Length: 195
Image 1 (cartoon, rainbow, N blue to C red):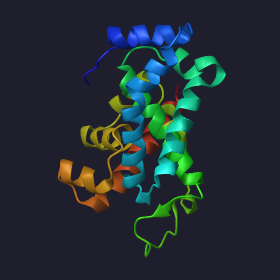
Image 2 (cartoon, rainbow, N blue to C red; image 1 turned 90 degrees about the vertical axis):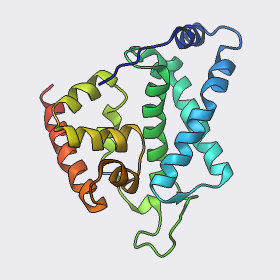
Image 3 (cartoon, rainbow, N blue to C red; image 1 turned 90 degrees about the horizontal axis):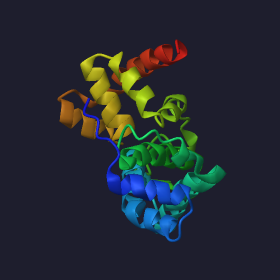
């Protein structure tokens, strides 16, 4: 797996935030707001959830609030083994998914769907997604998977792609993506318990 480390620009921005330098937080938000908005939109779309502009703004605020909570604990836990954008993508996606599942203000894109809204669907992957904040752990867990399983897990959990997008990219039927993810998650859970 290609490992793109922390850039000098992001290293400097990270240090400034952790040292609470003037304008550091504003620069951080300016640098990553577009990424967080994209993650909110893409994650909602992948889960067939329609976001009103104010819902999207709330999700973005939730992500940035999580970053500053406990004296920037999320940033202090960042090991610098990946780019800061990659780390924030994983963190933001996990937060957005959790909020979407508990939200009462979102509506399904397909109103005729058997599931009435996002909050009615429990998230069986939440335990796995919480582990995704640690890039080293993710790499170790993915190494224990077959190549096609690792690719599907990467696309779904790290890139936020829908089953349809994954199916098109890897040349598998859409119905096979769920079972592959389920098997891979079981393997990852077993490997994680062995730590």
